[in-house]
Length: 88
Image 1 (cartoon, rainbow, N blue to C red):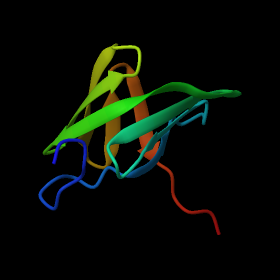
Image 2 (image 1 turned 180 degrees about the horizontal axis):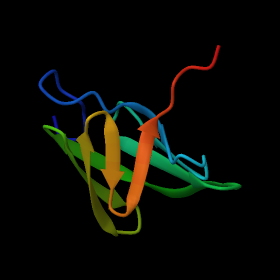
Image 3 (image 1 turned 90 degrees about the vertical axis):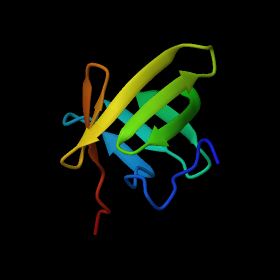
Image 4 (image 1 turned 60 degrees about the horizontal axis):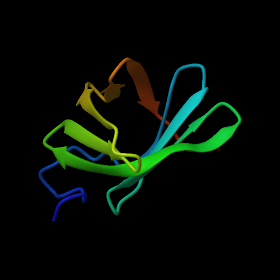
């Protein structure tokens, strides 16, 4: 099913953040994403699909972007995002 994470795909669901925490991209299990930038919540929203370790994004405005996960790091266009770990 398009937009969902299947068993043979890299597990991408969760929160991804830049090193400085300014950009926070949440990849939801239903194939949607919600990206916050600084104090601006939901700055970008849309859908994504996963093919192996490659992501294709379509923003709700129609803008498209791509990303790839390599060694546990999400390279999304010019951004480098790291999976947010649970805080104890």
